[in-house]
Image (cartoon, rainbow, N blue to C red):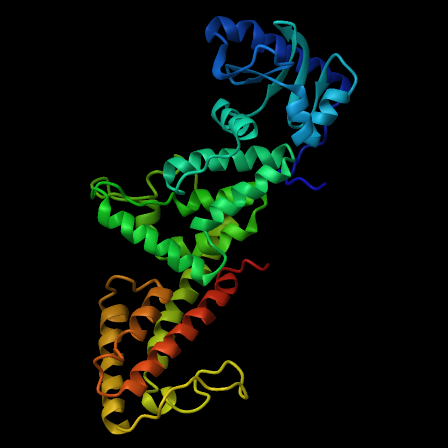
Amino acid sequence: MSIYQHPQPSPPPDPSSELETSRCVVRENLTSTTMLQPLVQHSDLWFCDGSVVLQAECTLFRVHKSQLARRSIIFRDMFTLPQPTVTTAHATLAEETYEDCPIVRLHDSAEDVANLLLALYDGPKFGNNDQDDFVIVSGILRLSTKYAMDSLRSKAIIHLNIAWPTTLKGWDLREDRAHAYDLASPTERASLYPSPIDIINLARETNTPSLLPAAFYDISRYTYAHIFEPMDDEPSRFRGAVVGVTLSADDMRRLALGKEASAHAVSAVIHGMGRGPLAHSRKGAFSLHPHAPSPAVSVCTTPGACRRDFAELVALATQHYVCDRERGYADPLYVAEELGALKSADVSECRACARALEVWASKERERMWKMIPLWFRLDS
C-alpha cells in the first residue's frame, strides 16, 4: 500500500546507531523531559484495560493494541516485530513500560493523536467545515494517512470535499452556506471556512488532490496583498492560517498563472455576452457540440432593440468588473452567474433573449469549472 511521505534527501542512518539513538530519545523523554514537563494521562483516552500506552508530546494515551492493529497495518506490523525496541518512520516502540504496558512514542501532536483516537473509538464526529472543525479533520486526515487507516481517511476526505468540492453544484452549495454565515455572523468574524493556504498544504501533505481545484480557485479571488499582508484592522481568513506557513514555490507559481487565467475568463465571458440576441436565441447557440439539439427557446422578435440592450449590458459589466473592479471582479463563476440574471425572463420585454442568456451563462459556468485544473496547472 502506498503511503505519501515527504522525500528524505539524506541517506538512511546506520541501523545500529539509529537503534541506540531511539533508546536514548525514549529514555530522555521519560526522564529529563518528565522533570521539565510532567507526563499527563489523557482524561478520556485512558482505559484501565488498555494494552499499550501511546505518548505524543507530554500526553499519554492508554488504548488497545487490538483496536490499533485492526485499523492500521502500520501498528499491526509494529506490534508483531521483534522486541524490545522498534523504530520506524512513524513511531518508536520503546523497551520501557508504563504501568506494565509497552510505550509507543509517536512523532505527532497530542491534539492530533487525541482526535484520531476519539474517531477510532467513537466514530468521526465532524462539524460544519468551519475553522475549528478544520483543526480536528485535518489532524485526522494527516494521521489516518500516515498510519494507513484507509476507512477513516476516506471519511475525512468526503467531509472536506463538502467545503472544497469537486463539482460546480457542490461549489454553489458551498458558497450559499458561506453567504448565509456572513449574514448571520458578527462582522469581526472573517469567514466560515479556513484559509485555502492551509487546505492546499494539507492536500500536498496527505496526497489528496481532490481538494486542490476548489482551494486554488478560492484563494485566487483575493489580492496578493490581502493574502500575504492583511491589514491589522480588517478581518482576514488568512490571518487564521498557521503562522509563518505559506505556499511552496511551485504552488505560488500555479496561483499566479491561475489568477491570470481567471482574470482573462472574466473579460472573455463579458465579451461573449456581447454577441447579443442573434447568437443567444438561434438554434444550436448553446450547444457544446455542433449537432446537439438546441434548448427549447423561442426566437427573438426584436433583434434591433435586444442588440442595443446587450451592448448596454456589456458596457455596464465592463465598467463594473473590469474598470471599477467591484465585488466579484476576480470570480468568473460569480460574474457569469450575475450576467445570466441581467435580463430576467419574468420582466424582460424579450423573454426569448432573457431565457437564452440564462442558459448561456449556465453553460459558461460549467465550462469554466472544468477549466480550473488547467488554469492552475493541477494536471501536471
